[in-house]
Image 1 (cartoon, rainbow, N blue to C red):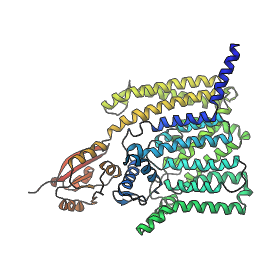
Image 2: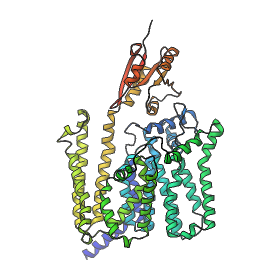
Image 3: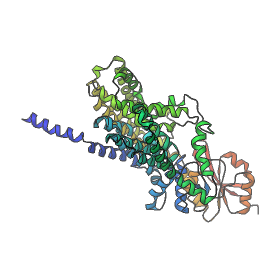
Image 4: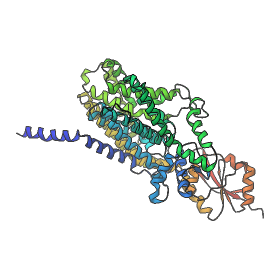
Length: 558
């Protein structure tokens, strides 16, 4: 009687946790916890300053069409991502670290939900659930999801477009209605980072259609509706650009679309890299689950005759985008982020199919167990931080704060790896993967909630800007020297653009015009160019290891 009652009770629990609604709720909760908690604990850094400063000036000036940094147009990227940051900042009427990063974090959470729906189209709910969790615990996804940028928004747009297409396939919709929402979303996505919003989902979907139903793709009516829908999406993308042209009487925004999206692809002016760059970087892109790449490759090669539609779809997605990015002459590591959903879905599917370790070859078993051993070792390395602190070049006061967190994260990975390995050997591979995912979720949470903010204390940009604002109350401030100054402008928070002399002569003219003024200078070389005997250093701050900012004023000659 008890056994039957127990079976009934646990059977009900299994059915409950197999529900798609429960899966989506868990994904949303875990994603929100990992990405939204303590989102503003670190100051903006590197390229984040551009997103923060442009959005801040949008709110300050009311100009929502022309992106500005210190009053100077910055049209390298479309305005969509800046709009989202400005809108998320409206309730508090100011851009903060949290509001600047919120759209990116929310985009990743929504992307995980859409990936669940896409994977569910081909396979069962547990595979879809596993794929979304693998996606959420990929290091680049968490890293960029907690930074202000446009790439995570592009990633979300790609997944929404693919989901729209597959929804039409589920309904056996042989018409062309899905093309219009598909290209509308692609047009809106292109407002975030550029024309990749059109290119990436089109490569995934139309290559799949071409293989699956070549005649339909070549049908005249299909081509007509594709062209009409694309034109509609392109108009949505071009509306802000045309408004910019009409109001500023310059076509530089249109030229920058060409330069950043087409010219960069064929004739790069920056970010050059050798042809093999992505072949190595792909292991970073899908980390830590890149440890399973050899296992995935061997398993798919062995069972290539049994490949189903889902494997072909996600495999084609991964290969086509990988080839596309390799063909580009301009390469950056984070460009590969749209490959992560496809890899996560493929890995989840293969792990579900080969849960019985006994059915694997010796080589497959080795490639399946090796990542577990590596994870345990990486956990031990984190724990060794306490015992061998001299290995890490970190200031002593920061080292003391980091020890506890790294010890806890390392122990979690060690225990999770051992438990996952035991479950895999007991022919419970999926449960083992859930344990690994849970371990990385906790380790990433500790890392991004606590460790990253502690390490960020080495960056003195915020305290430096506070000192600048304290010393320069009521005085004119200028910025001199070569640097990415958007983060500086953001934290200085001035309503009016700051003068920005570009040469020693212009700097001297600044002091003649504002005898009581101050200059922020980047680097010792720029300081020496101003003839140090004629200026006085008021305060300074080491922003990065080799970057020092100075606040100077003219030495009175009276």
